[in-house]
Amino acid sequence: MSLASEERKITIMTLLNEKGKVNANELSQLFEVSTETIRRDLDELEKENKLKKVYGGAVKFKVEVEPPLLERESIHVEAKRKIGYMASELIEDNDVIVVDEGSTALQILHFLDNKHHLTILTNSIPALMLLIEHQKRGTFDGKLILIGGEVSAKHLRVSGPISEKIMEDFYVNKSFVSVDGVSLENGISSYDYEKAVFTRKIIRCSETAIVVADFSKIDKRTVAKIVDLQEIHMIVSEQAPPAAWKAKLQKMELRWIHPEIEG
Image (cartoon, rainbow, N blue to C red; front, side, top):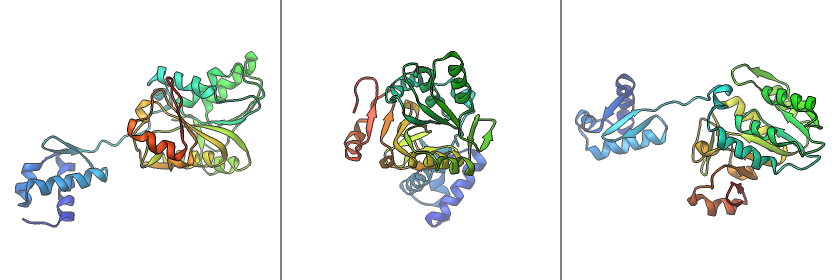
């Protein structure tokens, strides 16, 4: 049978959902079209994030979800610690900063011993508890503000419309936000829509918006867009940006900070 492209793609997805994998040669025979035509169909479906091409055909697209915070804290620990230290070096006495609930941003709070008179806003329950401990020990002498809103027990964070409204009442010098994806074409993104919306609000309420992201987030896009790269000012990572990105990052005047050099 000879079907139009859209009809073929619907049938391909039906077969993929039933079997988990499709073969290009078998599809070619089924639809009575060339394998080149099938490959074009598979290319288009892959661009739509509906499947993943493999040798000889395609498999079902694996939908990624955001792991719970406790699981995220145990992943890429050394990289996140390096990022936390580098990000802390950007903080100056008397700054008003936001540290979001990401496991990478949380690392910043371990390197504030020599910072004075900070005001820290956070939507992270672990960050709140850590800073309270620092206050008790006398290693944090600033002001601590918990951003209110709806609580996620899984991620130990606060977000939603109440949180967004609270952010509008503050002038922030620097915000440090964790993300799930950093893409030159698609900007920064999150697995969670509500988190993405709140992170966007943080960025737009900040004089300087700083993304903290380890190597696993680079050149990756997830489901919910936060903002384009043009809306952020710095990225702190334990690795340099992809070589192909450098010219465009310079054009955007986006500063990329990593251990070897600053660029």
